[in-house]
Image (cartoon, rainbow, N blue to C red; front, side):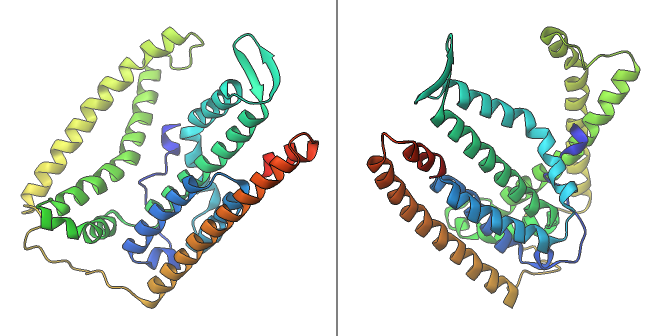
Length: 290
């Protein structure tokens, strides 16, 4: 499971998405994620999925490689589905003890799975197509206005970049520790919950020790190379916008406008139709769709 984590990894390829300015990808990912929470209907999610599919094709990253990162959060998605289906109030379809399945709960579960899927894939695309150095430069440029308030922007961007880079490293380290402890007789696949919790101790302790050791080695390496923060530092490859970056911003604005228009329009339409057909099967179908 640990080796399936793709968040924080970089996939080398020659694509238009890889060549985009990191500021465009950071702003695009941030606005894309926000758009998934603004309106909660299938029409907006369909538009978001179409845009994401186009980006996946353009970035030239294998779909299988990108989607394998979903295995690490599969438990969270299943938990979200079960919780929404069994504990959401609404028109009850099936009921047993404290559990009840409602049409609203099923709808919310489906939309939440779609939302989580789009969120994880969009975040993975950003890290898969952007090197840690360019990601740090992009974050620093975006938060540069905060320097007026004495915020250490460069250090903040560096910490975020290192944290993202450590995700796949620690995942790989955890996978190695699991294999090593399994060879020594540890059991991580026990059916008893208490045994599975106890089996995490020989995994967590070495992982924390390895993480602190790697952090210490990284700090010593940065000091040995003369790193003392961002003041007065120059860049080998300064960030400059190209024509493709402005086109990307235009596409992003068009997407946001489309989402807002469709969200407002279909929300009002669904509200009207649901009130009009409140006691009919057609009303239930429209409730599911919008």
